[in-house]
Length: 428
Image (cartoon, rainbow, N blue to C red; front, side, top):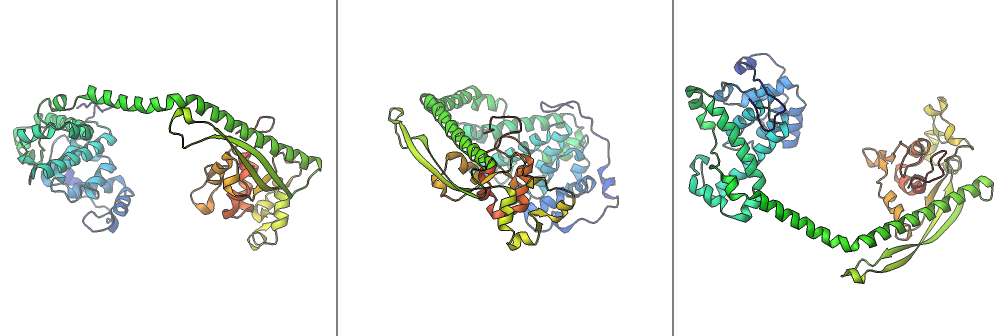
């Protein structure tokens, strides 16, 4: 059997699914039991953690007997996301859940992609819930041609339901094809699990795709037209921001050169003063936009790892774990190159000023955009040298030598400013 979403023909296995239920399997964890109460996410996670054989067993135990006997359905092909939706998610307590289960089995056996199977299930539930609410239906079988016509007669409603309706139509095609290939007895046994199909040419009549696309293009064009007059201003602002960052880089290099020459020594109290160009953001018209010159200043301390560790060695958090600022197990392995006086990239700045006075690019670093790690306590600078990150030497050292709460503040300039060995241009 084929589908518009399939990557090739899929041959369903001839399996007696009832025989699989008789095979011994480990007991089911309580959190994965769909009949027990519990938090949906926890139960779904417990189900996904099960081996695939046990996942299939849980699904088969839930399926009504007629569905287990349904021919040409490979229940093992249903993706776990769709199964968790049926057993634990929004469809868990629906009276028409078996209808959705049959659709999932048919679509998956037809080779439909797992993401599309899930989209069909959720879309059909959305349409069914609306139909029940709008026409006071107790059973979906009660919906008739008149209700479908009334449902499609509202253009605004069709715009809202265009996506779900297309999935509904695709699901109806799969079910129609499946029932056409069944024997009379098998079709009669499964008729109660079949959901009402869309009327013929419903989407062509009530969902004008061309019109919807034109409206979407007009909305995008309206947003773009607002930006076109500002293009020159935005480009100029980007160039000015780049100049501001370059001036800071050059100032930082000058301080490093002075430290290498002996003119200043770490720790050195420094102050950086400059200006930045911005635009008045309260302008109502393009003609009202003009440049604003804003002063920026930073009070900071120039450090290197050896000096920083020496000044903080008395602190308990470093005295217990470090010898000369290196973790003892690392020191035994000879990882002391961070304290080599000839190390090229060994300087960083500790900032002291208010964030409201600092250059624009330092606020990005303060927000932790350049940091990695899973938790706040473990976040450190990326260990990969590249854009806006130091070399791996200066990236890993803060994770051990600087307390987690101070890393962003203390090493902000060391992260933002770096120069690759042999490359005189700073990566910014």
